[in-house]
Length: 240
Image (cartoon, rainbow, N blue to C red; front, side, top):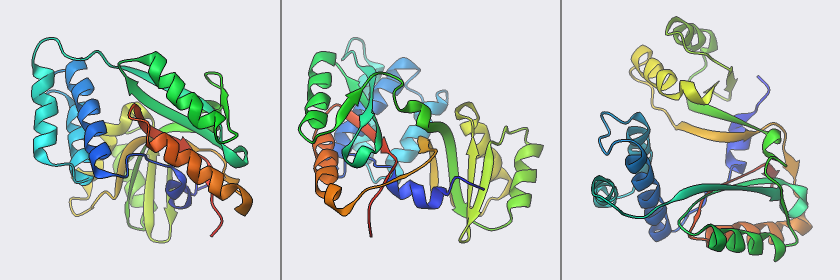
């Protein structure tokens, strides 16, 4: 139905490929979500969803438990979120989400990634309007009407449903994530959600030329090496 998420989801770069960095970043994010709410996943839906996501990414239980236990104590680190936007190699649009306890360090690190790869760091809002911030749930299936009916009966505000190559993808407003997820699992108990996340989906993609690929990969690797970077979203499509 227009978004071609099955193609684009492979272009949404998620950082922290290395396990140690993956664990560190999940630990930081779990700490913040637990600290800002309550350190009880049963009473904190955002924390519960993040724990589920961490487990799907094979984060060990002790990493999860340590972060939540740390958030239960008094004091601790004071993290804040930071979002940077700009244009990467090949004129692709990029959003970089960070968690930081030192904003000056973080902006310096992120700016270096842009300047050293011929990219351009933009102002807040410079590229965000080229993405849709959505809840995305994707699973195997082909009965689009049945899924839509089940979600509407559960009073879920559905933005769009896409069916492509035997894969159904539901797009919904961010605020509808928990309701959409629980409604799908209640209506279709055998469904395995292969994608269940709140993410930025590009409205259009940019094809990167073969000449730009090495610099694009360097750019992504540099961002991945920044400890404060949590997620990177872009609209680039690399040549096959």
